[in-house]
Image 1 (cartoon, rainbow, N blue to C red):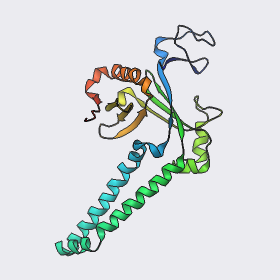
Image 2 (cartoon, rainbow, N blue to C red):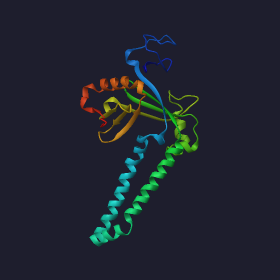
Image 3 (cartoon, helix red, strand yellow):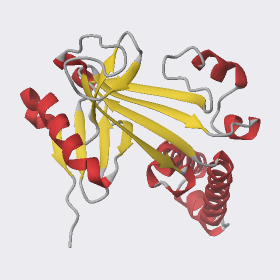
Image 4 (cartoon, rainbow, N blue to C red):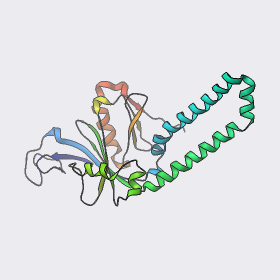
Length: 231
């Protein structure tokens, strides 16, 4: 079980008990939390692709619609027909292909990372680390060495890993959550139409994670949804 407690004095996670196993300090029920880690490779994760495509595709679609609308206003239906016959759609498909290739290269260059997840009384937290950070891995994540240096002051910074990102979402700020049992993934939305965070869980920890999420959001049952896989 990933259930642990956080000792404020030691500033670390400790086994569940009345007292800290390291310093002997008093532990409270409120300090209990779920804690687990995952090795994550962005280029293999659909949700990382989704983060890019849900912004890029609407922009591409908008440009297409605007171009057609401009032709319609400027020259009427015949101008639109001429544009389409002139290879406009083919050009946009090429642009789409190039865009997907660029995204693949960017995600590929990011390499692998390690994510430490914590579910506690406040909400859901995620700390992302790189085993051997280099400038390419940072810039392809739209990060700079200066931005990463600020995270080194975080209590969860580790000497042998580079902390590159911290994400958090409070329970009360979650407007919708989808529980994807088949893939052991939590999809968190804020507001209801925008996916703000996703959590990849170890399969063996799914039941504990599912249980805590439902308990924390029990007063708002309408927020919790289950992803159903046909077949």
